[in-house]
Image (cartoon, one colour):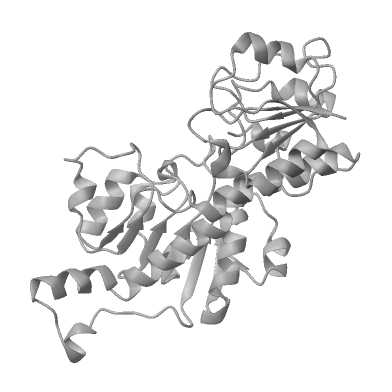
Length: 336
């Protein structure tokens, strides 16, 4: 039987990501080392690596050496935090050389993030938050007067910035609305997007023409402030920008300034500093819908982590490739 170190860090308790059924499956498949809701001492981690074939979770101090001497049996490193481990915490070069798979649970969150992104878009298009606040203050506008600046998602022109896990799930949710879907993703060939029913489009054209634009790209060295002030100024007047992946991708100060000026509507779930200071200007913005990085980490998504980890552990133990978690690719890791 293979051995696996199960280390999820104290911040993410075992029973929040593993059901009892999945924990039992895991225990029936591999010999679990540690598996406690507390930090594994670094010395114990180093010693356990010499026997383990699978590392589930990455400690704060990182994985450490993964060469033939330090981890002779290692086949896979499974991150349960939400993305591939930072380069400083995992020696990717050695992992790729030794064909050690570095796996991320990121796909577990895709459905939940897509769902909230859709909710954000609908809330902004239909002015739901503003209407609620007006109703509570007794300042509501009845009849046609309250409908003047309301739009619909049906048959809208929708832009997607970054066509990855989140976007693929969002596409399914948008299907009933019969939207015309466009995407900007320089990492994907146009033919791939077209096969998904997506119209490839340059970033500036997308911003200039789409009624709703979803920012869903993962952060990389190349896309920091991809949406500069100049690009944000090109957003179609009255359109909606949904910021759902990372604030890394936008000039955040320009975003809230332009939203306040009424250039477009914005919805925001992620921020440069979390939580933002109580006096941060974003808290007083107009034409915005704000939530507190609540898109992904709900029970359904968290239990998906344990389920996909267990499925892939079973596959590895059977001599098969993992298929549910996302495998780190050398070309992409180098860009992070």
